[in-house]
Amino acid sequence: MKIAFLTPEYPHSATGNSGGIGTSIKNLAMGLLEQGAVVRVLVYGQKEDGVFDDDGIIIQQIKNVKIKGLSWFLTRKKIELIINDLYKRQEIDLVEAPDWTGITSFIQPKSCPIIIRLHGSDTYFCHLDNRPVKWINRFHEKRALQKADGFLSVSKYTADTTNSIFDLNKKFVIIANPIDTKLFQTNNEEHYNEKTILYFGSLIRKKGLLQLPFIFNKVIEDNPAAKLILVGKDVRDIVSGSLSTWKMMQELFSKKAIQNVQYLGSVPYDAIKEKVQQATVCVFPSFAEAFPVSWLEAMAMEKAIVASDIGWASEMIDDGENGFLVNPKNHVLFAKRINDFLEDETLRLKTEILARKKVEQFFDIQVLAKQNMEFYKSFNS
Image (cartoon, rainbow, N blue to C red; front, top):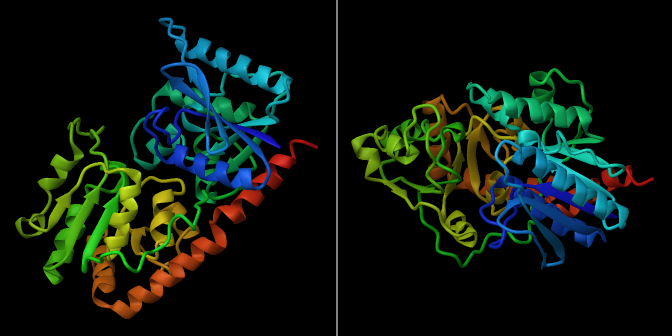
């Protein structure tokens, strides 16, 4: 099959910054190639139009049309023409797009099927974050879902929540985000830092970063040798207007705790694996996710995880078996679970092994690429 992904991001130096959507597309694309598929990624919002090869994946850059007041509409029509041309020349069989901002709301190809995969729309994340959504984003996201030919979601929780907030009744096929477990393996020769707690991801309110200082304050009370390492981009806080979430966090740590905190800022993607390898425990106190790849990466590298217990989490982690799930606002229990891993090596090692097994069994790209191919083939009969 010939599959196209329409996306605002893709992890390559030529296409700019990328987040979770881009990473999941790259992971899936590599798996689909091994299944014999031809994969093309249509990346809009680019500085120029162009086509290049990325390890067998065809990357097509699409420059937005810039005419005041008409850019959003004309860009969509440009994408529509590109899709129609590719489909007519039999270079693609279908297009998959994310739900984020509803890019396909006014894209109406003549015959090419459009599939929407839920990674978490702006409306979805605003709902989880208890803040208002821009009406224009909600409008486009709902319209895109209403017009789509097929429906996927990375978690059942995201599918159910999306149907509820948009007042829809779509039947989503649930296929989780994949990870190549061969690329994320523990290295026993790597230096290991004892009693090191790692968070990696954007420093942003919705990921629980304003709860983490209170959690670490409790950790330090019982475990004064513990260290907290933070890795990721510092993000402006949309609620308070502060230009730095990190600055807000510093004011929340106790005097004793802040001495044991190190913020490294953004680091290259390959360097993150090194930081995960060196950590004792990984923490993810998030309030808003769909199916976070970062959790899978840590689990694949045999790391004990303490994470949020909200919605999607139980579809990934079995509490008390391959990780711990705790409400981020329960600072005392969250801290206790971290200290359980820091102090009980037998518990931690057992959990780490089971975390790796869970990812290998359910979330490895070899498993999920086949499930995706079966779904795509249903549109090519």
